[in-house]
Image (cartoon, rainbow, N blue to C red; front, top):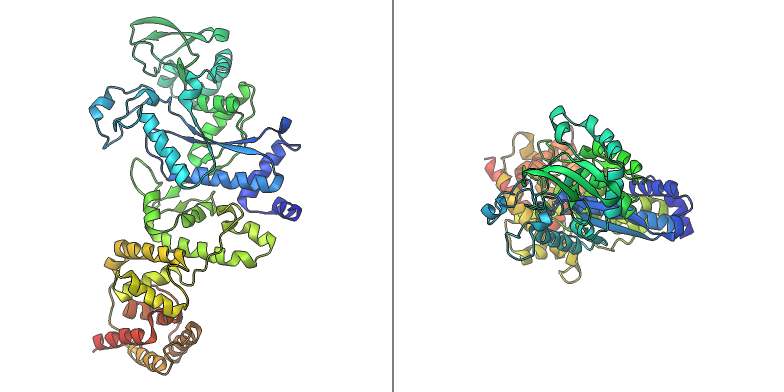
Length: 525
């Protein structure tokens, strides 16, 4: 274990780099042996989504890295900001007329349009918890309204009032002229309507938590307590306040929140706290290079990824290069699945240094499973395409010949991957396949390849077949040689790219591939 820690201290894997920030923060450990507090935030105005998943998953990777480095106790708080006012009604929501009547009220006070929970926020909070539980995440759920109404934030709310002018000094320079006129770090909740009010306030008595403001609902100036649910802080101030109140040591956020982190960090220091460690990750892009937006509906959702690939492959993809913008679209799924399995396959034979830099070490919290995956996802997609079937048992017949001893019982991960391949092929590959006829020297090359395959036993191994494919391409002067393989993909598989032909032929069967060649040559006239 000490060797692992020594190597982890030097590792360039980003979770260890992030964990070492906490070692610098507490060189001798946190005072009194208190746990390190990690936090992730969630806005329950909508459903949990990819941003929620990736932030929790990446934070847990840092948390595990810290455990390997130090053995310190730690906690992850998944915080739901359900005191935020409902600014608009999400589209396609039932009982939208009713919801419009509750605009600007705290989400925790808006009735549940689905009629299953005590509030709209509670409905979405339960979805969040089920969402996190389904992925097996280790976390503690904290709802904002419980802390506000329960008085847990009262001391820090008084602290905000005591430092009101200093906080205004941080925020006002960041606002437009019109916004400055009504801006307040403290948003009183109207005793008349229960709405979160965007009004200017005056501090009456910070130690008692009293403010005054012109109440637009009552039509006169009101004196009001901010304590025990009497207010909601503006979110940048709220973020800083809860860092201090909860003792948060680490929180990551998206690149779009860099300025917000700067301002909230200044406010946290004003409140007498120390801003948490963390980093700003890059955003995911859709296939057109545009930032993925929940409101736009572009890009790929978690549910869609899990329809076409295992969850581990998504965690793997999210682990890679968090500070680089990456495409998140259907096209990248097969490559992500196969890269995940390549790293997983390499892990058992690696030395400790290589293991700690292997993504699967962090995806699986140091305990990657041993999975025998004899066939790649890309190869399965090609098999489904040429077999032209959704008969899973027929596909398993090809697999058993290629990898004797395999079955759904002995290789459940492969069985699930076949399910994913069938759905992915149906939705994204089938319509794009179009075999062309061979041209020029491709015709003679295919005849020679057919002759080479005819001379082989049906159970010839993939490497023997691959060598024969190479030899035919060289004999017919394909330059570069990849043009030969491109011709094979286009004339036999109907695609512009494909698998190693040796592996594919061994899987599909020499006799079946010879039939494909015969069909191609027949099309050539």
